[in-house]
Image (cartoon, rainbow, N blue to C red; front, side, top):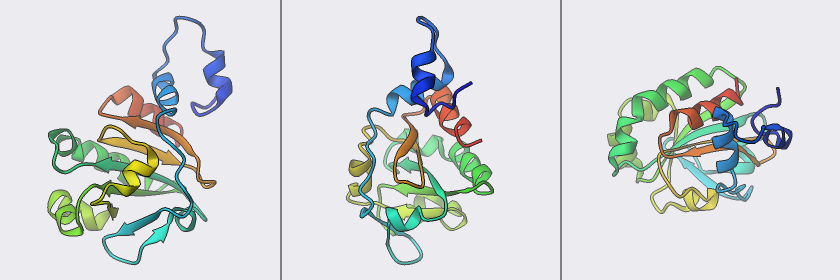
Length: 165
């Protein structure tokens, strides 16, 4: 079977068949590959470019808007996903559309347990072309979006994580 980010997978899907991977693959058209010069600002530490963050590992992040109910009720599930994959060959993170202080209030202990990027102006969210939060994005070492899912659709999120597993 082809991996979900493979174009061969999409073209090999029989007409009328809907795979749980297909939604994440097809929705990847919405997300854009970011500029390698896009700065991401962690809560603790200096800002780094996407290019610098991807030198040794893929990046899997969950983008949240702390001022929406959807982002608040997804926290435990999203934290479990990120904590599971932090042991893999990828860097895991939160991307929160809030100030550093708001990130800490919203995430609680997860703000220090998991790498957290503050994006109060939504510059990173816009650069990735994300239109609906919460979202999960798998960014490869070459700076390309492998897979993404916007909104909370469990099958789509699973397709993103299956590509990493």
